[in-house]
Length: 165
Image (cartoon, rainbow, N blue to C red; front, side, top):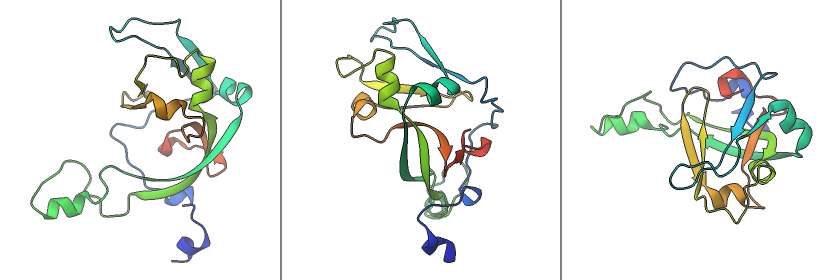
């Protein structure tokens, strides 16, 4: 109970861990991400831009966002008890944690790559090293008051491997 009243922030070592695949071993000094834009037919709209983690830290302003995140399977164990069986880990209600994330605004990186409010794109699609994918609406990604980060810090430290670093 003491931890919950001392701070809203969940200590990194107590954060929930959930993976769909084996955790990749990434050398952050060699990590490079790619940004590309395609039209509705899948045709590239500009040359792919590659950005290293070093470039993200050097070329863009660092921002911090505190957020609470929960696993999509949170309370899956309770759902299973109703007779509606689900796949995956039968979480109770513990797959929820809060952290202060540090990184660069997705908006700033997209604009650096030539993607701005005039784009015809409707979503930003992410594809991770482990082949997991996700997307968010372009309006969320480009919102000047938004909270979308390409995070490289968690609670003031480099993000560890178990949490995506």
